[in-house]
Amino acid sequence: YHAKESGASVTFFHSDMLEKAQQRFNIEQDLGYALELNQLSLVYQPICKGENVLHFESLLRWQHPEIGAISPMTFIPIAEDTNQIHIIGRWVLAQVCQLLGYWQAQSNDFNYPGITVNVSAKQLVSPAFISFVETLIKQNNITPYKLGLEITESTLMEDEQASAQALQSLRKAGVRLYLDDFGTGYSSLSLLGEYVFDVIKIDRHFITNVTDSDKSSTKLCAAMIQLARTLEMDVVAEGVETEEQLEWLTHQGDVSIQGYLKSRPLPVEDLIHWHPACKMPKRLEGRHETPKV
Ligand code: C2E
Ligand code: MG
Ligand code: MG
Ligand code: MG
Image 1 (cartoon, rainbow, N blue to C red):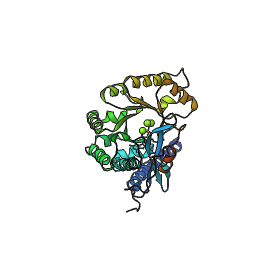
Image 2 (image 1 turned 90 degrees about the vertical axis):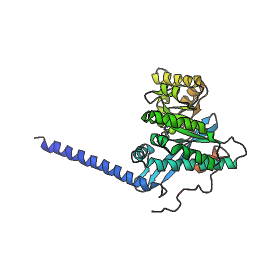
Image 3 (image 1 turned 120 degrees about the vertical axis):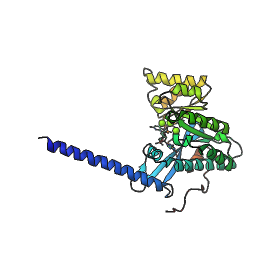
Image 4 (image 1 turned 90 degrees about the horizontal axis):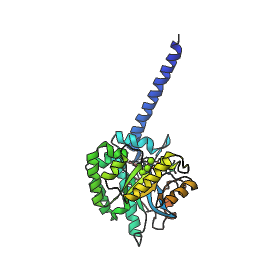
């Protein structure tokens, strides 16, 4: 007697699933052409000390012709599953290194901001990754520590031994290593002991409530900043949105600030407003100006 009702809900369930699968399939396929068709771009978010920018974090953007903007939270996991992350990740690294090389060639001092790149687990442990990074650094004549690599805890858990080895090699190459989304993984503390990171980035979920002194997340956040200081690591607070959060963080000591309060992620042409060395190159190579389909 409920046949009609349940029938309807089953139908709905199936078409919903189908739609999701279909959507995913299209995204997967379309992502394969996104680079060639010039749909991917990078934006850069300032990481600040006081009024000055220390670094920018590079963040991927995908402008899909029909769907519009698709979040990296959606398409990066798909790119990881399908191995497209290798091509996309290499493109990101190449873009960033070219930009750094340009800034370095243009500036009289070495005081210009560095840039960080997010690195997926699969990229980090792929055999060619280290030599690719080293080649880019050489080719673009970059001071290695201007390039930062952001690695999340979950990335390291996927293949601990290979990750540890890759991180050692990257250290030797002289790039700055950032532990991203700190505090959200399973074994944050042991990771700090085993690997040598230069910087920890405290996840924004800890920052949201820091003005509420009763919250355990606030106490944890204070403790994480202390811990970083003890281990002589730099700290970045992610997702700082309010003056109150900024004030609390400043009170904790030497913390770099990233978040909408300072700036949203910006297109490359706007970076000059943050530092005179951050000029936009006339053309970045490998930008796929002409689509070759
Ligand atoms: P993430 O590395 O933790 O990057 C920080 C995210 O927080 C960015 O989201 C940034 O736009 C956002 N954000 C910055 N300030 C604020 C704030 O004040 N409030 C709030 N609510 N959010 C803020 P986005 O750009 O959507 O990127 C999401 C994630 O996608 C990144 O998280 C990163 O894990 C991944 N991703 C982005 N670009 C790349 C890439 O080139 N390669 C790889 N492998 N992953 C990437
Ligand atoms: Mg990051
Ligand atoms: Mg993060
Ligand atoms: Mg995050």
